[in-house]
Amino acid sequence: QLVPANKKEANNDIASSMIRFTAKANRAENTAYVNINKEASNGYDSRDAFAFFSTNNKYLVEPYFVVDDAKILKNEIQAIPYQVPINFHSGSQSDVDFVVDNIPQNVSVSIIDLQNDSAETSLNDGNVFHFVASIGENENRFIIKFASKNVSINDNAAASDVAIWNKN
Image (cartoon, rainbow, N blue to C red; front, side, top):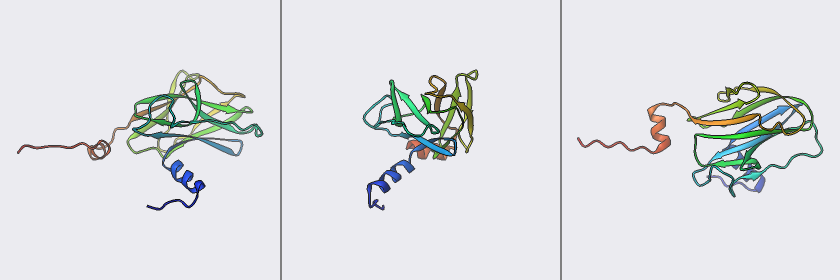
């Protein structure tokens, strides 16, 4: 295994293994992260990272999760199924394309829009969710939902370390 030569490379390696939630607006993009980690909790814990917002770029739309009333940029969760509110800090009204990538094969991710009759949209397979962000936090509007995805028996066995015994 290669060991990164500096902190920046180490941080890039860590971020590359996480599920990435990216808001693209006004020719800029900003990303929040989720990592499934058996040692974490599904609530706020020391493995989570707080969100800090830009004070000099009103065109950024910055996604963040709300966990136990904390604004979280990196959310470490223990297990799925799991649901978490996501807000979008925006300095101006903006057309946003929201995408998720690096989703594990056996995980389904969707967004629920509570202002649109709780419509649920899959974010798997490169799907893009479009919405208009208002100035401010865009609070209490969206929920991210994680679920197990139906996969083959071979994938399930590999993912959960299942052992099959036959007495014959």
